[in-house]
Amino acid sequence: MILLWDLETGKLTKTYDGDPADTWTVAFSPDSRFLATGSHTGCVNMINVQTAQKEGSIQLEGKFVYSLAYISDGSKLAAGTINGLVSICDLETGSVQFLDGHATPVRSVSFSPDGRLLASASDDKQIKVFDVRDGRLVIPSLNGHKGWVVSVDFASDNRHLVTASTDCSVRIWDLASKEEKHCFNTHEDQVWCARYSPQGNNIISVGDDRSIMIYQCA
Image (cartoon, rainbow, N blue to C red; front, side, top):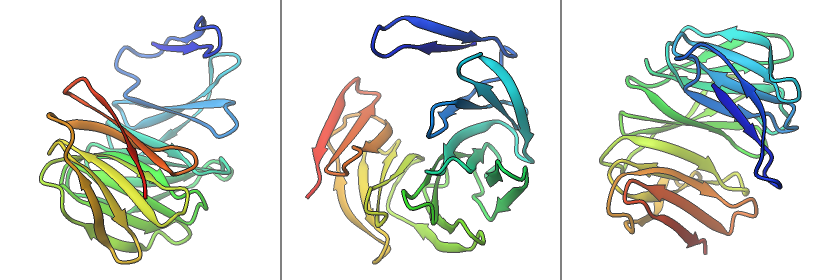
């Protein structure tokens, strides 16, 4: 079941009843009209936020959709699955592009704000960066994490990434040099999510140590 809440009132507004094991991840479209959901069967469902009804679906080759992300203009949706596949779905044509992904589950995907690049993070401890236009692998691997990489997010400048890992670290990457720029080791347990603020001047992370960390970016 998916629950939709009004952030201003804190009240429950809509519910969507799917298969009990039908939802593993969700992502709002940029215009907030649709909610994409990833299922254990490899199906991505498109839910109308106003009606809480399914309006379409996309079947992927991979099973267990672990991660979803919309491109900034809402025309494409990226997905990462348990068997390492990275897919880009064109929501206007219905076509699906399968990329040279990972050998292990893809935990997180993120489009750059300008829509040119797509980053993926996996249990293989690697981060890959693709060209959205042709699916070409721009950066085969960013290495440094000692555990699963479970979260990846682009900075507003399109040139940096932040990642979170089960190795308890949060790392910033410079895409121009393809190197790690900084490593935060402030969490005492696995870190499951790290995100840039909309302006890109702060990073927030959350971990199994039940703490939320806020970092200032130089």
